[in-house]
Length: 218
Image (cartoon, rainbow, N blue to C red; front, side, top):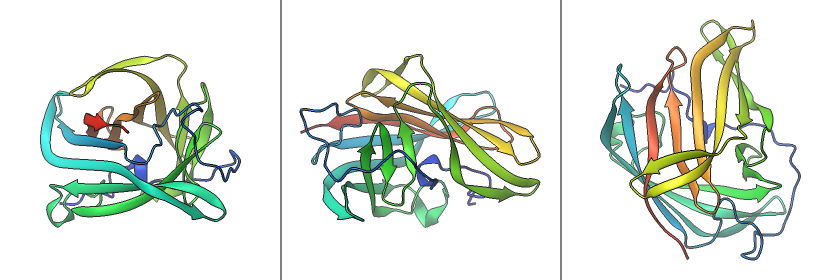
């Protein structure tokens, strides 16, 4: 049963960005926090979390690779190929259906920005911003507020142990009610996405999360 009504898929949220534009690609001589290099590849596996907080591996996998660059609205973006396996009949609403899908990203002053102007991550320490668009839940409009933490977090994966920046997303209804759920996203400098959560609004822990299994860089 699809759970997209109850889940928040952080990767697919589109929200406004005022971080500035640049038509130049990230060069290898510059800081490449997000590992934006054509030919880079990452493999991820999804995990479910039970009521006791235990991690349960799922037969849901992703392979993400940078396959080229394209100019969109006078800016150069890296073209990401995202291949999903294990999402039969689209049962998991927080990821696309099985097959290959394409997304476009660039680094704009430390913000990982998609081709629609939405921010996926910020590596600016203690940066805080509101995610757009807001969306409607049964009890009212919900706003998503993201904040990059200053403290570096060590995170263990099958691909190794990484020093990560943590982005925490809180969910606040327009009447001031704060949901217990928090989305946590982890990026490592020069490695890229290490782990990200997808949560029930009413839960204190993630319902599912994606974790890095291996990577191969050019």
